[in-house]
Amino acid sequence: MTLREPSLPIASEQSVEAWRWIRRVAALTRYGRAEARFDGVIVEGDLRLEIDAHGGWSCNHQVDDQAARLLSIWLPWCMTDTSRGPCVIAQIGQSLDGRIATASGASHYVTGAQSLVHLHQLRALVDAVVVGAGTVDADDPQLTVRHVEGDNPLRVVLDPRGRVPAERGVFRQPVAPTWHLVNEGVAGHGDADHVSVKPLSPGPSGIDPAQIVALLAEHGHRRILVEGGGLTISRFLEADCLDRLHSVVAPMLIGSGRPALTLPEIDTLDEALRPACRHFRLGDDMLFDLDLRDRVATGE
Image (cartoon, rainbow, N blue to C red; front, top):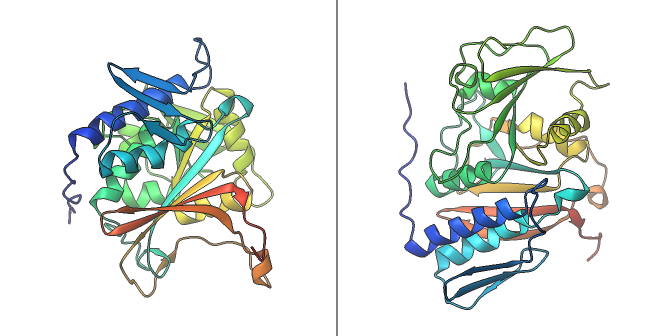
């Protein structure tokens, strides 16, 4: 059975303009850009948008709620300094009880239409999107930005054992360059012109997230999205290779199934991660924007 994507929300005129400004800021702050460093000011006619180093913003014209939400969500990510090294963000959509799918793997759709647009915006603001073998095999995602204006990122399939079938769309559809990451000695799907096979050295516990981030950065990809699945995101988080996490929570109770994150057990809550958090409504869903490099001390 083919499932339709949810009907997309109608964007206001100002939010369309805000998205164009966000894309402009992302381009102006992109690593390796030859022009002078972005000064934090966008001027268009009598409009002036000022952005500080942390993504805080002010505008000399009033903007509507949709546009203001977009600017507040995305400008901190766009202003992250990638000259010091790559920046990695993950996004995960989950139910209220922390599930991303049923036990059988059904996940379409846990989150709503506005959250789908949010994900496509995130893809448009990164150089590369990384997904695990299980996600590609089960969901056959396109990993494109078809619901927003923008460029498709490099698609990176993390498949150490080479178990994803060559029939999956990322290997057949040349809408974006694609890497197939496999362990050394494993054959990859490099027959199509848009697909490159990249060998990985196995880490002590399987994949080595730091190696993957370094490989992408070596090729100029410094804004990186880890999109799924839950185990892949968990491994990047456990390896301290995530700078930011977007957790989108839907008002749904699944009751059982696949967990959003799976990390090593801790004994006390003093050991729990407590990142700085902002939150935004995405239709019926709630986005929690977690800054994993800004953690709240226990007891605060």
